[in-house]
Image (cartoon, rainbow, N blue to C red; front, side, top):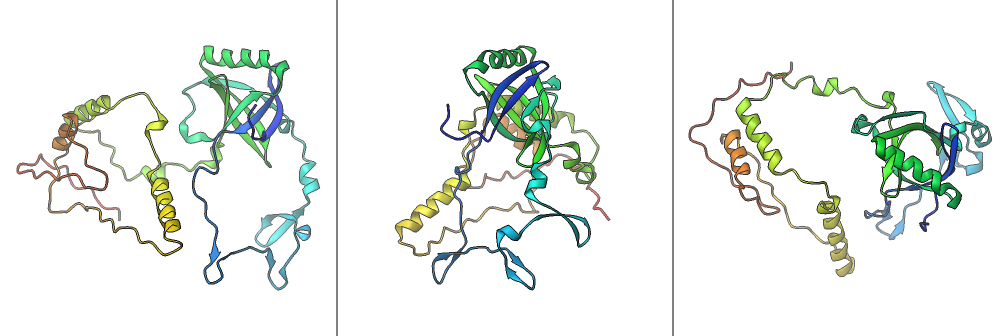
Length: 292
């Protein structure tokens, strides 16, 4: 059993079958450097106080949760009143529907959690549900009350265990139409599409997260290390100038795609790719009209 404490304990229910399970956060909060605000003259951390206008700092036991039902008007709720709201989903996650493993748009996924059986007695039933989901290639859907909110969740096999992912509700997502409305509806040029598709095929491989690194966090840790080595002195990073495309150069999309497909060398990190000069550019598409 993992050293971390479960964030939720309860029952996973499938029809008349209930299994004692535990949830653990699947992501690490300390994977990236975190910062505190520091008062530079004294070197001491900056603290925050709960302050009321015209009164000043107040004690936490004088604070209640308020819901703004009209501008400036609140209904007050105590922690006891909120805790008294009893939802079955606080202790039981019932799988009420099943969908194909690829039917849920990635836009809906929020945060992952590992689900494990809570004890040896739950092992057999847990394994049956896990393997049934895997064999049917399905994802189980249900609702779970967690940290003051009822989540829509998806449960699917993950190795020897189950992966629970919280999902956004429909009304939590923005409509994409206002963002996509200015994109032309015309289809891509057939020749360009063929070359681009071939390039995608050439670069297709199995997903391996270890291949990708967070370069910003690496650079940030290097900066912190240099700062520590310099005993607190200010350290300036080297000026990084990125090459900006010049409006006077014509980029031949077909030539660029073909060069990539033929294995053109990838520019070294921090260096701009050499720009190709094209003497006979392909016919340009009609200029896009600016929104009035």
